[in-house]
Image 1 (tube, one colour):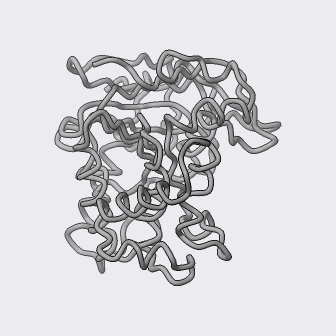
Image 2 (cartoon, one colour; image 1 turned 180 degrees about the vertical axis):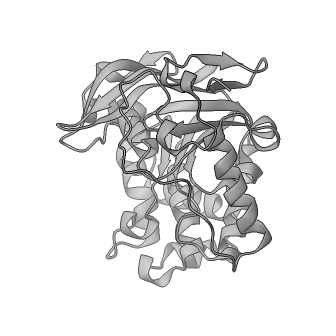
Image 3 (cartoon, rainbow, N blue to C red; image 1 turned 135 degrees about the horizontal axis):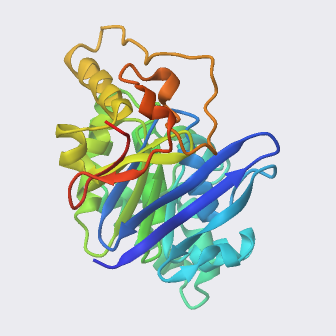
Length: 315
């Protein structure tokens, strides 16, 4: 399959820290790819770099991002968003804050669409919005369009944000922590919704999440991120059935324990006061790894396990 999105050795820093340390990953046309890892590893910053919404004190210092054959870093933030808005849809992590409280769902979904498509009238835009809401499992779409965000449940807000992202015939849907802050019942509904979206023709998805159960249900391929770089990648089945990196193994073990007993207190990964040097070529996970050995202090290459499975580890 042809690459639709590609991060190539992307580096980003603020005044004190290295945030992304040579991030490389790709999403093929029609593929669903998940980027997983703990909070602070750089997942959301990678998405922000693509969309041109990095914090003011963070800058890209190296590497490239290609979307649909175009180097998006060649444009500033506003121009980048203008170049991407009809081809990339974005579902933010905090769906409540993304919906303006004094604007109806109808206006949320149609204002930008009408502005960006002068030949399309408001009536046609509202009809498209209603059809999208219906396709996402909202039975009374006409009524929902007349509501304000405070009148919507968490699951309904998720559906509205997804529908708004799909108003244009996009090629890529980017979702940041789509199951965050949802109860278990709504979470399962959203899982099923994204699984159905993954089956749509020509739509690619780039999902950023720490929810491994959700990732397991929707992703074709998975990238595991730690300290600003990819430490393991593979097909979804490979990552979950035969993880190689000790960090990946720990994440999956914790997720499995949680699935078996939701009332059980989950143990934390080995903690360390040592902050990893993200610029170092040695293993950033070294101080927390129970499998560490002397060779881990040497530069660690990205090794091939199979045709589709790679890991940054000496084990």
